[in-house]
Image (cartoon, rainbow, N blue to C red):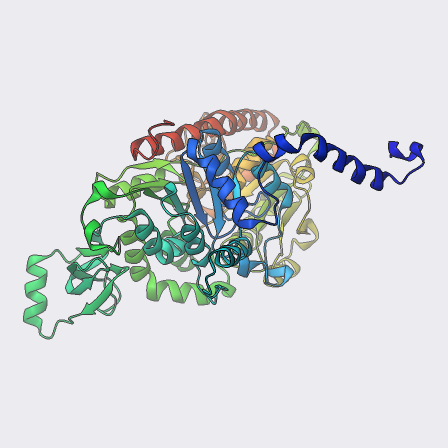
Length: 590
């Protein structure tokens, strides 16, 4: 606006000034800056040149990092930032990002340009399918090639394949998250890294049921996954040939030679025979970030359904879990054997993985970092109500069932307990993205509906945390660790949690400092939160924490310490650094 005093349009003055600046500093610009951004091949090559002095790391997840969506994506943002600070040139790709953008607005995670800009400012490279397609077209034009461009066509790993094609022998570390991405992309990663074919004794694989021929030309005997009725062999990246047992004698002979619960499986690696079996020839390390063990969520779903703690809307998921969970478990565990190292989100899941994998595969824990938010300063007396925050995304599965359980079973007990004491009702607020209509109907049918408020897709969470006295996380099934608990403790809001949620944060037996509350109907008041093992205990936890100012202050103080010290970004950055060091992926940095 200052240019207006010169009598010319400010935009034209800035355009003229830009040309003057270029004319004056052209030599320095040519020597120091990347090519014009329309030259996509040049941009990628310029980025590659910066990697000559930095170990290159590729992080593969289902979507690009997001802060406001949940589903492990805030943790992804923290992880890539930490790796960048450790000295890695980090590239991030989302295997489903291009298809996700094409979904209706109500069914997709919103683009977070502010989050992506901050990552890019920290040196993190975000690559999309369209960038790679344009770069390959430019490269084909430069080379005079008529190779057809690729447009996805349902190939989940196309963005990974194209990036690795443009950057051969560049990445020294590849981190892949989530079992579906790991399953579908491992073959391409193994080929890129010249990883050897791997055969291991694997949990969830029965007997010897056929052979697996890898691209390297090697042939292995392999078993079948439990629950597949000998129709699916533990052969990843190769051609499987089943030899179904034809007589009880053959089955007995296999059972005598191979334990029924443990069998052989193969993860095929390099397509080049010269690399087969030669681990020292691998050119990069592949790390599996087990953001959560998905099959355990389905196991717990079945258990919760048996206890009538799930809604009718998730009955199809319950039936599917009952029918396929054994097979799903075998598939997911078998994938872990292919990794050079494994990252889990909680110590509880790390212990589980260590119990089923060979001791040679290192396992480290990298949990959720607390968000960089100011501590809520609203005093106890100015707050009221219980808060549940979740990402529903239009589904009753997982978070929807937790809210259903709260409204139909826990909250009525809270209302009854308050009424007995003669106190006014405790309001309940349920906030989240795309609240499903099934949950809306449940709330409208509740006897306590006048005290329940639904907040659909709130833009900001801070006002909710500032107003609530207690947050509740009553989930009866799930896996990994609940980011919403880390977030609540970072804001300074005391929490009531289920035993499942507490397990994810390493709390097996809460250390109660309140002996009078150790009766069966009371919850266990750990230093950081109140744990309710039963419906009655969850309700009592909520009533006590909402009404006792001294107890509220104690839990708040301990939760803040836990979020900002025990689960700090520095702690998880150190764990990531340890993972890189153990795998010997980048000795120059670590």
